[in-house]
Image (cartoon, rainbow, N blue to C red; front, side):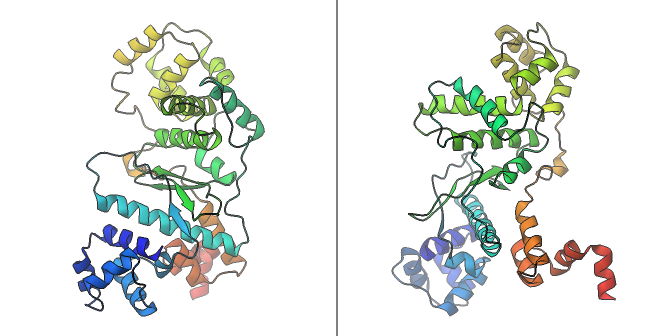
Amino acid sequence: MIADRIKLARRKAGFSLRDLSAAMGEMVTAQAIGKYERGEDVPSSGVLTVLAKALGVSLSYLLDPQGIELTGVKFRTKANTTVRDLAQVETEVLEWIERYLQIELILDLDSAQWQCPVAHPCQLHAVNDAEKLASDVREEWKLGLDPIPNMTELLEEKGLKVLTVSLPLHVGRGEGQPELPVIVVNNQFSLERRRLTLAHELAHRLIEAGSFTEKDEEKATTLFAGAFLMPREHLQREVGKHRNALGYKELIDLKRLYRVSGMALLIRLRQLSVISESTLVYAFQSIARGWRTQEPEELESENERGQRERARRFERLCYRALAEGLISLTKAAELLRLPASEVEAGLKGPRSTNAYRR
């Protein structure tokens, strides 16, 4: 694993083998680094320390004590994304997971456990069965029919680790170890789209792989996401069971109520036969023109991108361990990637910290 970590971190840094050797002050040659990356040789502890500093990663990242690996990586991104961009995201995810597992180990929490709401994996016999699956999950988790105010917080509460980075992928561990319950979403997406992505990824964890063709599986997970965020009974109560026309203000209010995209709302109304196909087409030609590419009246501004419904469980666990004296202030700052003064203020409060310093 050290070989893979060195190679990935070097790509993230945009270094050639010679560049990395130079950044290390010629401590080792480019040929030696090549051997490290191919697994033909193992760097000494001294070399590893210098490697980590030159690559801008932690020593624990290179050593990989948790046996973390990325499996089934699927980047849904533009074709012009560079190898360096992809490596940077992978490195960021691996470092974050490594820190997350550290704090869970300190608090004696099982990192692989989450509150799966159904017999897992669940085999569906038809795409439309995803509607009932969404209803069953809501019932098991006692969510009722009301809109979900914070999708990220809900999934973290159920034991799923959520991270927002610039690209989504899957995370696993070495052979024989349980898969980590992690969902990674794109923090450049709108809040509406991130919520749908989280619901969509939840569906992938619940539906047995191979139940359908890949195309039908995507249809099923998309149906689940819509049904989970916009339950049939609640939506029909708000809109009516049959509509011949819809107004702009009504649609905007509804998308704010359910915290979904305008396009997802319209498609959900069509799924439930609240509107006809012709009404849907007319909406996209008139009041919803351009909604496929540009979200109307977004829930968060461009400056707030990725800040609302932010994942907070990892941060809470770090402060919990700090408050209980299980980790030092320095260790907490290292895990949180924050200045020690800021972490201290988070523990004691800004006024208490100032008084303490005086």
